[in-house]
Length: 158
Image (tube, rainbow, N blue to C red; front, side, top):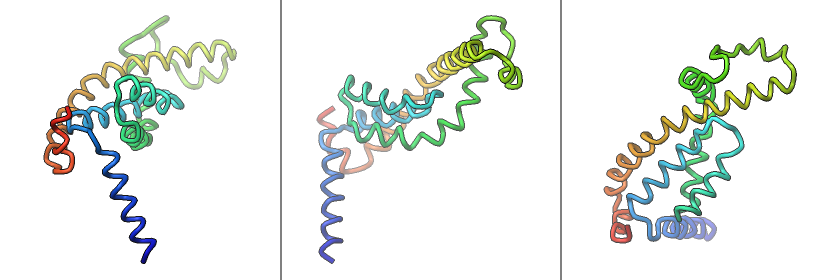
């Protein structure tokens, strides 16, 4: 029984600490950025990028990382669509689509070059989509978060 009370107390303290001084608009921006960064079509860079963004914009680090990790499954699902979209939007070089079978029969240097080119195109496609998505998510989440009494109290700190 004592352990249960201790856990409940820790949860309350953690919730208070996480929300302390965060306005609904700032919290919404943090969640939107974390989620968008979590969908970047390049594996292994999202956590470090969230650290840089959180420090640079003075955002809540645990919240941005939670949103980033929540988007991880979506990141895997969106890699191929971003690669295809980027290939259609930004056809560098020959302008033809790269076939997976042809990648298996090419030199390692050419393979690295093609994969880097596809990653660059996918990143550009992600960026073009992420900017309006972050703006829309921030607006929608701000409206929702203003209805949460514990968060709405921090409105004056915005």
